[in-house]
Image (cartoon, rainbow, N blue to C red):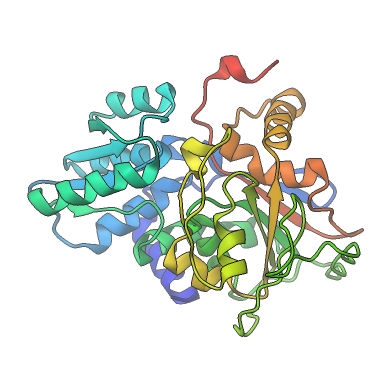
Length: 345
């Protein structure tokens, strides 16, 4: 996969997804408000691109497993395209997301304790019915669709030094990495010097992982053009962190406040390949930092984010990632499917 795949996706889904706004919240710090997208998250970009790339869709429609947001996106896209959607979600899925699926007319099966168990059931069902499977993060068409967010970030900000994005299965972060790797307009500024790492902050395969520390991949991938990507994960679901440490995707335990949306047990194969680039740094944040970021987004900006949607911002707010003076940073707020009653203590 490369930048051309994202450009093709942008052409394919044009007019079906929103060009979500960018808000400069302080000098050089931008929020990409992808939580205002159709269905409440970026996921609809990949869903449309996967379905439209498939040609004529089967009579049995489409099928997906999801922690909630991907299911909502697939159900939304299916309704627009006039096909049946069958969605498998785990038992931890938020009632808000289940209600949203019902409202979109999806056929819902709630099964399994975690996403991977729902995914197994969905795969079995797809084999039985012939429905088109739309994976939550590990299909090229899905990753390319998500990458159109990166195209917009570059265009709307005029270019940034760093993009901060949450990671679950990694399809969104991988797509943004690809989507920001093309020509960058001159933003009229001198790119900031990357922050000097605190002694001992870099994590090597033999050292313990700590929230906020950076992983430098051992991959020999040649750095491409584009901004630094800060890939932020809850410390209780470190799929990318552990994959970088091991040198390949490995299963991790899933728990914590963002488990319904960032609850993949293993980083995707495509995502691992893309995110092994030296452009990418892995950062971990605590559940407490995610909760505080979510509350701060509401208190300061009246932005209603779900925990996963606030995870990237948690890295800045907690100091897990500290921009250098003059660094231009885009923080992607990626999901809003939440109960507004939980936004305040």
